[in-house]
Image 1 (cartoon, rainbow, N blue to C red):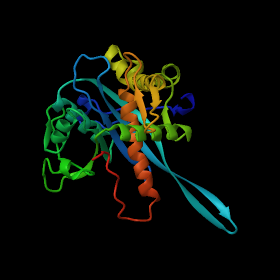
Image 2: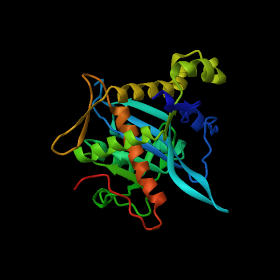
Image 3: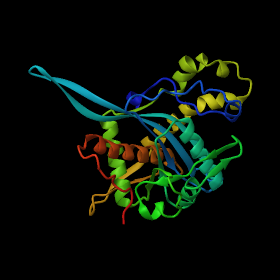
Image 4: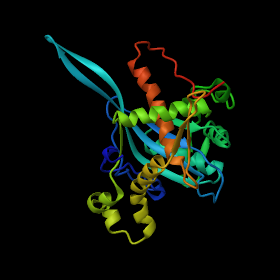
Length: 298
């Protein structure tokens, strides 16, 4: 995936002390015209298990088009969205409330438009927290409720008037997982996914430009700035190490780990990528009432 590693500088979320002091985020990225932002979440709840992490990926979807000259006219052809994975957070297992709060922190800091949420296991519990008013004790902020946009039964679990319909529910199945894997493969083949530059290159060229990193005396402060590059390397290693098997009878692709390897980062990014592929269908559709495809099998 070396050709995908193009992004020089990541997005960084705000630190608690900066929020409390109303300090502007120096790593904020202004939104481009037509840009969509997503926080894609693969959920896990078993603390201490090496290959069971919750991963939250901050992904930019940037609209692209090409212009062709036909006679004396210029015709613009839509090319969909370019994906940029600008940040990843990794949480090992943990409390449902804590994970819901972290998703909301990233949603606000990243100025995201949608949350793509894994509903397996305790994921539905995280949804129930996000669908209610939540108070962030660390940041001393109250968050307004959010709502599922693609599954009425999930949306009706918690009914709050005027809640923002921006949570896209993922209820995985073999068929859906196969479609998600195929979509990510196509995205990579079409060179429409950008990742952060390699960690070693960031250490040499980008991180020394950050004053707080260069002058940091605590390892945790250095790791804060290194983490997005390290998580990107983990994503690449995970994805390259996965086993892909096509079932003869059904044609379904099954993606699995090798030994004790993980696939949490792969899952998070692939969920976000699949949702963006649905947005591309919306972008290309002339029907303003286009209905999103539900990410579940009935």
